[in-house]
Image (cartoon, rainbow, N blue to C red; front, side, top):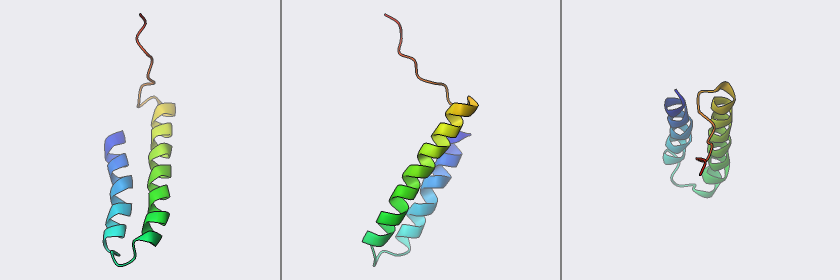
Length: 60
């Protein structure tokens, strides 16, 4: 479930940036942080909901 949502969250900004290639700086400064925030938000929500298991290092 997390992979499709993350893929969609990253694909939308990438496609929007691609459609405006003339202007590079503005879209990167806008959609880059949006993609980071969405990815972190989806990851945090998945972690809180138990969809993504928390990493625990193996005991030695």
